[in-house]
Amino acid sequence: MARKYPNQPRRRPGHRPPGRRGAPQAHGPRPPGFTHPAMRPLFDAVLPMKGKERRQFFNQASTGLVVGLGLGGAMVGGSWAGGVGAVLGFAVGVTAAGAFVEKRRFYRR
Image 1 (cartoon, rainbow, N blue to C red):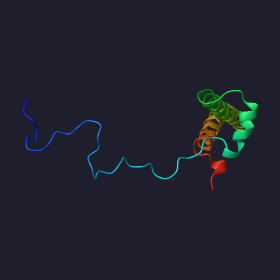
Image 2 (tube, one colour; image 1 turned 180 degrees about the vertical axis):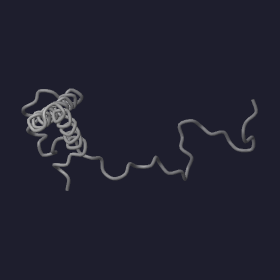
Image 3 (cartoon, rainbow, N blue to C red; image 1 turned 90 degrees about the vertical axis):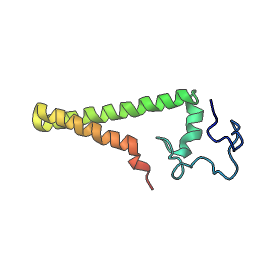
Image 4 (tube, one colour; image 1 turned 90 degrees about the horizontal axis):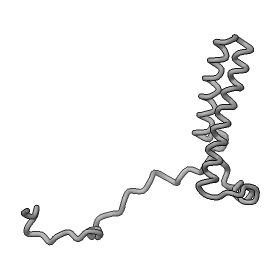
């Protein structure tokens, strides 16, 4: 098979050509996690898990928060408007809690 550019030297794998910039950086600093950074020493002292297990624990906690607020919205909506209100209250509760957890509205500066 003929080379694409026979008059140029071959490109050696694993070496970036001189003068080429590195990979583009992400836009701004990485956002913090679900919990406040100052709480890390407390979690280190109280929780026996680290790394992937701790992340899984907090993911389950945030899922419980969303479901719990959805059920609370269903109870409030059911007391106001019966079955239809319960369904709408659950939808509103899950949507609001999901936005709360996803966007971390309680810790925005």
